[in-house]
Length: 491
Image 1 (cartoon, one colour):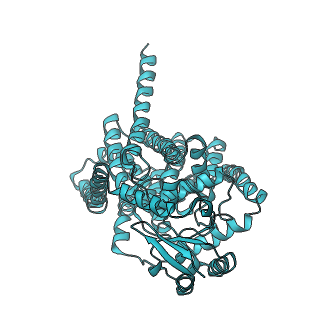
Image 2: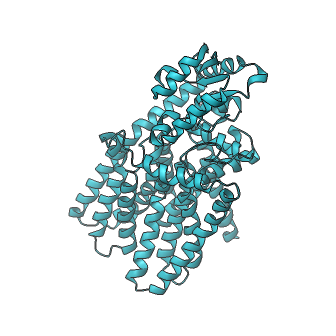
Image 3: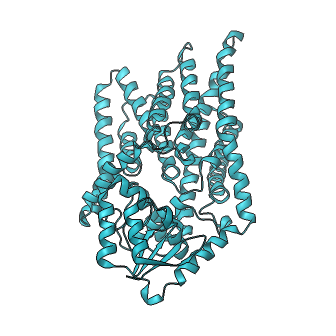
């Protein structure tokens, strides 16, 4: 009877944790949640568009140019299969956030009591609010994969059942493949967890288990990679995939046009905090080796990999698993501190944690909460939606297949529920500088196909003089508003 009560209690608690993740999405995800009906976000809109495009038979990179990996778009397509438009996005977000919350809570309960675990979950969601940006990013959707691998790795190392490596290693391989084919930098915590397992097995001189882990990891990676490559091979787009995701994606990841900054480093304070905590823990007597290795490897690997990319707020969601590990190990470590002198290091770590949370993360979370309240209670977003429809309705219905979307905002397509009519519909100025053949292709379309209409954002500030001059010579501006500009071909 008592066991059944415990199981029911555990089920209720697990359900509450999962529901908390779904509530978080509804309240915090500005660009997708039904609470913010008029709010749309650039990246979120483009990703859901790519999901719709896949469902409608289009092929990423071949039909629509982008640098993000295909598994992110497959996520979006799965959501669109069940619910069209924003509803499909919210579905996959709720699954992701619910799974993340559940895995985080499970991990916390391995080291801490129920009260501390719930407090830690609240801290996690508070910081996540600011980092979520508007919602629907690779970092958000891949977070549960990182947490799953950390949980599996920690459980494996705690149990010391070193001969049971097959299933965890296979799952590690699948999860890594999903992120590898999505956005490589997001895999930093997973890589650290795998590295820790590898080092522990080597330390125990279990070389056979190391070999098994590697083989099963490769098996999991291959099990996901084969269908991904098969999808593009069957559609004649493998070369497009590798061009965009690897060659150009790497070039963009190392294109530090913003430069490293104090703000960037402030966002990485969680890595610094965990590293200092790891060093302090490593100096303790009877410190468990796997904990030292996990803390230090997660801090270093995440810190290094997060210097490859562009430091938007959502980029640092990848640090949140480090915060969770910190919150897991702190209670256990602090209870073992008996001598007064030993409080010095925990005190320093506590101050660093407060600085990290209050200075680097709390302000953006508070700002985001205030922004969401403002968006939910004002109608300014609907003005933009009206402008989008105004521009589109200026084009006669029988000529809407003759539009060249030169540099339309990503939100434009989400509002209309349309797919772009050309491959380089967004971010063209940046992409053509990254990959010059795009410019030749764009000018060729304008000169040879002579599209009757062009829809673009501010053409005057278009960052390529040749394309801009061509438009101004051959097209006349017929309408502009706060959303887009509409041009009609006159010669």
